Amino acid sequence: MEAKTRSRGVVVAGFAVAVLGAYAAGHHNAVGGQPIVQGLEPVAAQVPSAAPSVAPSGTPDFSAIVSAYGPAVVNIRVKHLGGQSADGSDQPSSALGSGFIISSDGYILTNCHVVDGADEVTVRLADKRSFHATVVGADKTTDVAVLKIDADSLPTVKIGDPSQSKVGEWVVAIGSPYGLDSTVTSGIISAKARTMSDDAATPFIQTDVPVNPGNSGGPLFNLKGEVIGINSMIYSRTGGFQGLSFAIPIDEAMHVKDQLVKHGSVSRGRIGVGVQSLDQDAAKSLGLDTPRGALVGSVDPDGPAAAAGVQNGDVILSLNGQPVTDANELPSRVMQLTPGADVPIEIWRHGAQKKLTLTVGTAQSSAQRAAGAEPRPHAAPAKLGVAVRPLTDDELQQAGVDSGLLIEQVQGPAARAGLQPGDIIVGVNDTAVSSVDELRQMIAGSRGRVSIVIARDGAQMSVPVQLG
Image (tube, rainbow, N blue to C red):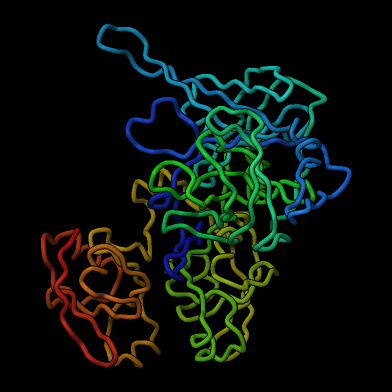
């Protein structure tokens, strides 16, 4: 499994970061008509000497964090030389973003999208000094980039542990929205391990911290003054903040940073499975006391998991000695495994635990996946608007069908036609469907209206769908 993500409970191996309506938080002077939420510029530096005080209203006083760590937050200015106009003159463009210093000798973390394709990168410190920056490395999959400036004795941030943070806790962002340096905003953690789409590999920290263009790459602090995330994008229909912002967990970013600094690129583990979360009913049917682990919905027959003996219908309880409480946790865990390493995996099968050992494979790059070098086990046909997965043998028997695909999520044309999560697609235009690839091919080759045969509540029906 590579970077996996969830689409209404379905986690799929190997995709890149993207979400409908979500925009990277980087500030570009000319955006070409597409709204982009842009750069938060964080403030970071030294650990505050005391915890934030509480104002009479009950809101924490964040001034100690800002004072201690603000000097380590930087403004990033990027130039793209671009092409030439009709009269032969250059048409350069520029962009703004944020970043934060992680070592006193000048290493800086920011977002990949802030510096992507840059011809010149300039870092301006809180004390107004400016430095030319070198891009040490950038990783599009996680949207993390490492910069280096020629300076020493710099203020740095303190790195925290995102796993210790809780939903509802206060967090603080420092950045340069719209180029306004050292802007401080606050809010709470709204959710953790938020996967955004079939293309997202990162389990984001969701907050309601106001972030806007220019905030990208800035730090997200907890009340101890520790950085727990990199502010990366917002969900917006307007291009401006609408209450939903997302940060890359700092532990994942630091893992990427270590590889970029050492090797200039990032290698990721792969085990070759597609998984989904378990609800109470599904856990009970499998004999589990509580909904935990990741239910295996598909196994790459040529992948590491298959070679180790993992099967469809297994529940992955732990990987490399770490418990798996939910399917959302698995993608980043797998990505951080070392290719070629032998790791233990514990599964639940037929009411009993079973221990296996698998040899971690190497995930393909986002460019290779985009070129179609790697299958997407649960990718939903875009024109139909569903996310689906194959049924287990038990589910096929319970539904009374020989083959079919369980609908996990519905939107667009499928939703308008009345298809629902839990429906089983058994055919398209009277042709039986048994795999995601078959459904994708049928929909890709269809135009206008198609007839989707579904099984629902023990009965089958044909539903006409006008494709998007």
